[in-house]
Length: 151
View 1 (cartoon, rainbow, N blue to C red):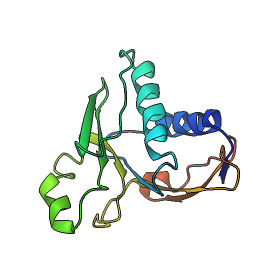
View 2 (view 1 turned 60 degrees about the vertical axis):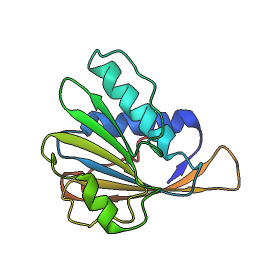
View 3 (view 1 turned 45 degrees about the vertical axis):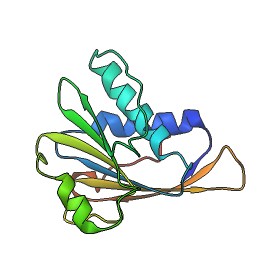
């Protein structure tokens, strides 16, 4: 799929946000500056707006590793694993200790063990046009029948 603009990326985040529930996991891959945090910001702000919660500034958790967002229906845990160097560091974070109670958005998930049931893998890459991105989506568990063709 080709993401043609920021507005198109926002529409994708809303479509995914409407289907999110506890224990879902979004794994966001791609080069620096390709749109992972922007997608996360659109998604979290959509969920806040939909649940009548004041919109917050959604920053990249690169240096903190994690930002949490309390919503009415569930908690969103937004991770950025860019600075981690090995699987032991990932395990120490305890990302999946609250697996049934939270939605996880994980940027740079390459060091994770792959035992996640309900997940979407979104792999962003640059295109020749500055405003466009390629997006490859892999769907697992409840997401297998999820369609994004109508965007």
